[in-house]
Length: 256
Image 1 (cartoon, rainbow, N blue to C red):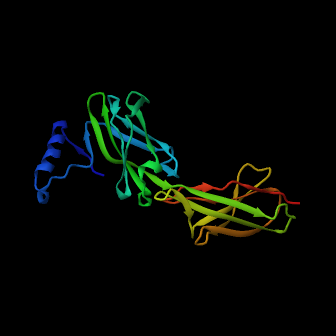
Image 2: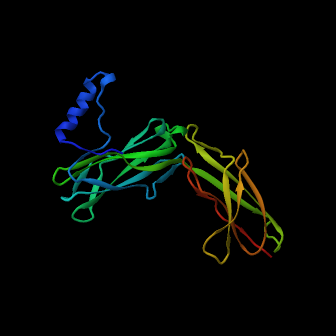
Image 3: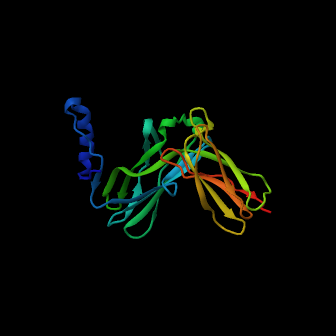
């Protein structure tokens, strides 16, 4: 990432000159432009910089923190861009003062797979472009100020049998991993992925991992365990750069 200190009037001049000069000799407009001491310090998308979309519309929150010795006055509309020409712009950000020098500016973007014609190739790493202005007219225009994962939603099921089961006997746990196809707006098999089998004793508050299982080419999961005590079994998929994490609902097993 490059940072240039440049006069405000020169920004427009650079842009115009880039258009006027023949392509072979074109002048590149800098990725980042900073006037004064304005600085973008943090960008967070949807709380954890990961957002998975299924077939329904979802509003995504973008939070940008910036600072300047004079304080932050405003932020321009945020731009989100990703693979396969993916592109969104936010609504007008609202800036909330944190202290005399720092503010956090927030805005949202509505993504609707049913009307936005998402392609599966758009899943992956996306970037946020930001422009914030300070009270003394300093500003920072930052390309790729932050990044996040724009993911296809997944679904996961778990079924443990037989139920009930005698202590020490074998339980067979099956399930299925699918993920959305944005182009057909349907969920299909997500095969050859590693998924964790987890167990939570009836009296416990959290799950522990029992083993890792690999889905077959059709996304089907199957494994066995020895029944020890009443509790819940579930499969858990950690997700990856293109597909969101998902935990199946726990299936309770009564052990006699």
